Amino acid sequence: MKKDYKVPMEEFIARGYSWVGSTVHIDYKRAAKLGDKLIVRTQVDSFSGAQVKVNFWMILKESEKVSTEGHAIYTLISNSNGRPMRIPEEITQKYLI
Image (cartoon, rainbow, N blue to C red; front, side, top):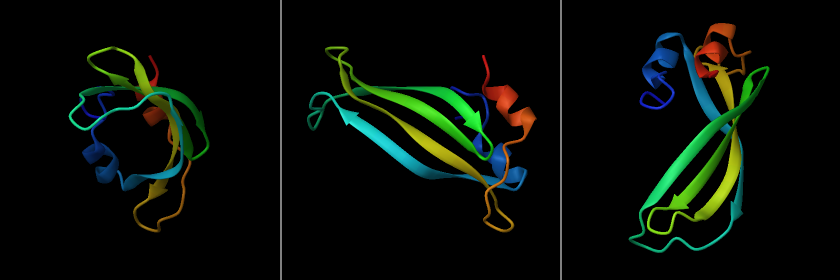
Protein backbone atom coordinates (compact mmCIF):
# COMPACT_ATOMS: atom_id res chain seq x y z
CA MET A 1 0.00 0.00 0.00
CA LYS A 2 2.74 2.42 0.92
CA LYS A 3 4.82 1.95 -2.23
CA ASP A 4 2.15 1.68 -4.91
CA TYR A 5 -0.89 3.48 -3.50
CA LYS A 6 1.06 6.05 -1.44
CA VAL A 7 -1.11 5.38 1.63
CA PRO A 8 0.77 3.42 4.29
CA MET A 9 -1.19 1.18 6.65
CA GLU A 10 0.27 3.23 9.52
CA GLU A 11 -1.86 6.14 8.30
CA PHE A 12 -5.04 4.09 8.67
CA ILE A 13 -4.01 2.84 12.11
CA ALA A 14 -3.20 6.39 13.26
CA ARG A 15 -6.74 7.41 12.27
CA GLY A 16 -8.20 4.46 14.18
CA TYR A 17 -9.09 2.37 11.10
CA SER A 18 -8.18 -1.09 9.82
CA TRP A 19 -9.01 -3.08 6.68
CA VAL A 20 -10.42 -6.60 6.82
CA GLY A 21 -10.84 -8.95 3.89
CA SER A 22 -14.54 -9.66 3.36
CA THR A 23 -14.56 -11.59 0.09
CA VAL A 24 -11.96 -13.00 -2.28
CA HIS A 25 -12.70 -14.41 -5.72
CA ILE A 26 -9.88 -16.14 -7.64
CA ASP A 27 -9.96 -17.47 -11.21
CA TYR A 28 -7.21 -20.00 -11.84
CA LYS A 29 -5.73 -19.72 -15.37
CA ARG A 30 -2.46 -21.67 -15.34
CA ALA A 31 -0.09 -23.21 -12.83
CA ALA A 32 2.53 -21.32 -10.90
CA LYS A 33 5.11 -23.84 -9.75
CA LEU A 34 7.34 -23.76 -6.70
CA GLY A 35 10.21 -21.42 -7.49
CA ASP A 36 8.34 -19.41 -10.17
CA LYS A 37 8.54 -15.66 -9.78
CA LEU A 38 5.24 -13.81 -9.95
CA ILE A 39 4.33 -10.20 -10.59
CA VAL A 40 1.20 -9.09 -8.74
CA ARG A 41 -0.77 -6.20 -10.22
CA THR A 42 -3.66 -4.56 -8.41
CA GLN A 43 -6.24 -1.95 -9.33
CA VAL A 44 -8.83 -0.24 -7.16
CA ASP A 45 -12.12 -0.93 -8.93
CA SER A 46 -14.81 0.76 -6.86
CA PHE A 47 -15.87 2.10 -3.47
CA SER A 48 -19.24 1.43 -1.86
CA GLY A 49 -19.96 2.61 1.68
CA ALA A 50 -17.47 0.82 3.95
CA GLN A 51 -16.08 -1.39 1.18
CA VAL A 52 -13.57 -1.21 -1.63
CA LYS A 53 -13.23 -3.72 -4.47
CA VAL A 54 -9.66 -4.39 -5.64
CA ASN A 55 -8.93 -6.34 -8.83
CA PHE A 56 -5.71 -8.34 -9.03
CA TRP A 57 -3.64 -10.35 -11.49
CA MET A 58 -0.78 -12.74 -10.70
CA ILE A 59 1.49 -12.92 -13.72
CA LEU A 60 4.24 -15.46 -14.33
CA LYS A 61 7.35 -13.31 -14.67
CA GLU A 62 9.15 -15.56 -17.16
CA SER A 63 6.30 -15.95 -19.69
CA GLU A 64 4.29 -12.80 -18.78
CA LYS A 65 1.13 -14.94 -18.80
CA VAL A 66 -1.64 -14.58 -16.22
CA SER A 67 -1.60 -17.38 -13.65
CA THR A 68 -4.58 -16.18 -11.60
CA GLU A 69 -6.86 -13.19 -11.61
CA GLY A 70 -9.69 -12.08 -9.42
CA HIS A 71 -10.88 -9.49 -6.97
CA ALA A 72 -11.04 -8.91 -3.26
CA ILE A 73 -13.48 -6.83 -1.25
CA TYR A 74 -12.08 -5.14 1.83
CA THR A 75 -14.13 -3.49 4.57
CA LEU A 76 -12.92 -0.49 6.54
CA ILE A 77 -13.55 -0.95 10.26
CA SER A 78 -13.14 1.20 13.33
CA ASN A 79 -10.40 -0.07 15.63
CA SER A 80 -12.32 1.20 18.67
CA ASN A 81 -15.43 -0.95 18.18
CA GLY A 82 -14.64 -3.33 15.28
CA ARG A 83 -17.66 -2.16 13.29
CA PRO A 84 -17.65 -1.24 9.59
CA MET A 85 -17.47 2.45 8.82
CA ARG A 86 -18.02 4.45 5.65
CA ILE A 87 -14.75 5.16 3.84
CA PRO A 88 -13.98 8.88 4.29
CA GLU A 89 -13.86 10.98 1.11
CA GLU A 90 -10.26 12.07 1.80
CA ILE A 91 -9.20 8.41 1.70
CA THR A 92 -11.05 7.56 -1.53
CA GLN A 93 -9.46 10.60 -3.18
CA LYS A 94 -5.97 9.23 -2.45
CA TYR A 95 -6.76 6.09 -4.44
CA LEU A 96 -8.19 7.85 -7.50
CA ILE A 97 -5.90 8.47 -10.43
